[in-house]
Image (cartoon, rainbow, N blue to C red; front, top):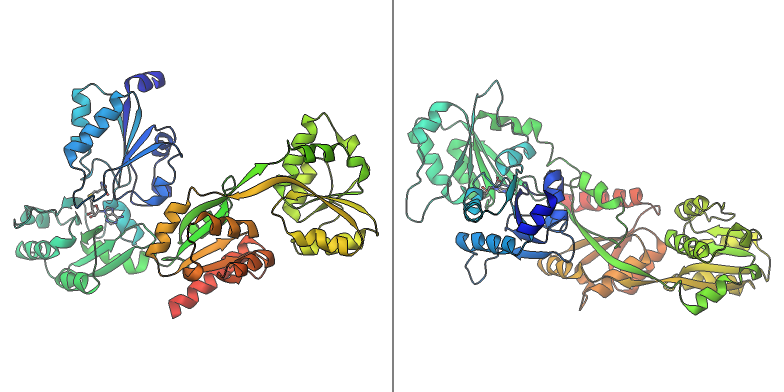
Length: 509
Ligand code: SAH
């Protein structure tokens, strides 16, 4: 089957759900991971687009290029042509592909040309948006059916909806594509005998961080929508279940609901900060901005590895440094006997834990996890002339070595890797930066500050508010003129507390 898909070309019509990656099905995620090309719509969120592996071709058919969207028949042709090249084509659509998604039309040409396909359902906004506003679309006390209706209308033509039939059901009515047709919907329902005090709601950007809702009565609906300037995409819900929203709206009550934040990190390390912030309701732009490159094969490094007998201490300032060091030792046929005379230092508990996995207990860990404090702790535990090898990145904190030298220790650097800016995410971040008045950005190391600044061409610090994990990070932010604050303790949880504080303050203001 798998092989067949590859040879003939294959199209997976995948529903992306209403917004974030959490509401995409696993099956959909699997297809995205193995796609050769992804053809996507305007409604697909950037969080889901971020899941597309780099190097995979992306075709945006939702773009309004010169005021013309790519027409439906052109989309159909794109899918066919891509599949005929023998490629694995993923057609990503907002919500569910078969719920007002033209999924049926897109399959027609494929079927005619015998292209194999699969439809992966998605969570439709018709259900998800009400869920995220605390509105159960059915409830035994209120109704026994739910109806999904398109309120799309051709210009200057009345809505083609059988309002009498709908009102007759007594069910919950969910209208899609209806923002510009609210008046027609309200008039139609009232004329068909629905009472004006029936509860109604509109949910804009449902299940997304910037969700907004209006909960009112049918009679007040138009006025409220205009007053709040509700825009597409939004669903309109009519039925008494809407009255439950006040009680059951769990989403807009999340502490960071509505907050947008950029989380910088090393490209190969996905930390816990992003997921914790998302849990709290924030919209997170993940920003990998630094890559590391091993220097293990360089002559200077290799010769130092053969001289370990000359040193008293081996000190590590990162997990990565430990891993590179021990991998290379093993590759050179060395083992613990080459290290048995040494004492070990680690900048913090994570580095120490990885060191322990290699079979070595750290003799020195400072109480505050940075270079300066590491130097202070080492000074307490060593004597003058002690020979200390600092295994770390070229871009590490120079103060560590300086403090040791000042106190008459023989400290040498062994630079085992370089940290460089990763520019892949920069383009996206630049667009976000351009469109926003202020951007919150988290920094968990001085090198992420560096990588972030360097990966963005013509970097402008004026719109950025940095949230820094600790002092060194803060110092780097200051050097680049970034307005910033610092977590009370150098931990991710403490950063989150700080972010909550800031957000509460802005909400109050
Ligand atoms: N296939 C999609 C619907 C496409 S039609 C689905 O199943 O959700 C486009 C309409 O869907 C929009 O006009 C709007 O009414 C609705 N819509 C899509 N995403 C939405 C969202 N996140 N919040 C509110 N409405 C949304």
